[in-house]
Length: 43
Image (tube, rainbow, N blue to C red; front, side, top):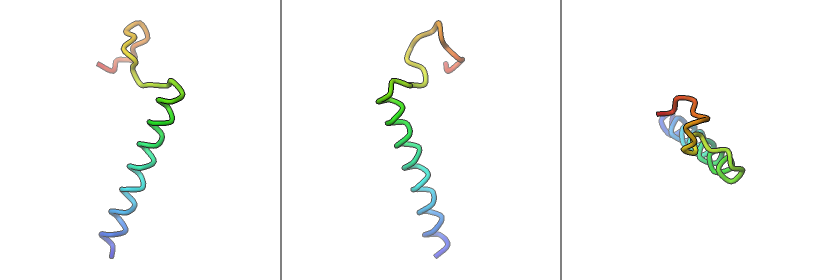
């Protein structure tokens, strides 16, 4: 039972992260964007 609860919690967290990334992309807030003049050291 504990394993199922942990797996469900992790799945929920992953879903929230993916949803946040999709919303940010739709709003134009991407992490890098390829603009090296504004780079925060992503690569």
